[in-house]
Image (cartoon, rainbow, N blue to C red):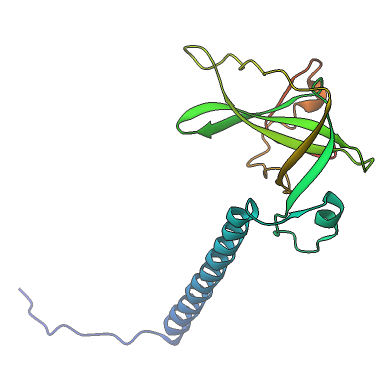
Length: 179
């Protein structure tokens, strides 16, 4: 058996440079993640505090240049209860369901808003049956809530089913305001 002394080799210049580049890249990624976490915490705090913020008009909310301001708005108009959109595959408290969205025509504007009326759990033993939608008032109502964009889609697999839907309510997997 050969018991020659163990010899340590010096790494090549390429290996040292590659290691230093890798350390630099991972430090930059870590810094980016920390900045992203701070930004997310700020956005969540704004959203949390929006419900207790002073009321502003929808025109004032639209004029706000900050995309993540989430102003607390009050608006008077009419819900279009005959045009209901159900955002599918939503989870709340471990239950599968839909988020109910209804167009809203403000009295002071020609631009229609999309109002989130909340979550409804799917019904039936296999949770495949759509929930019953409660009656939506067709009279003039005053709403107050948070002015925010619709939820961002995850993966848009299979395209948007909205154009293929022929009856109301329309079941969608993501909300595309252009369609």
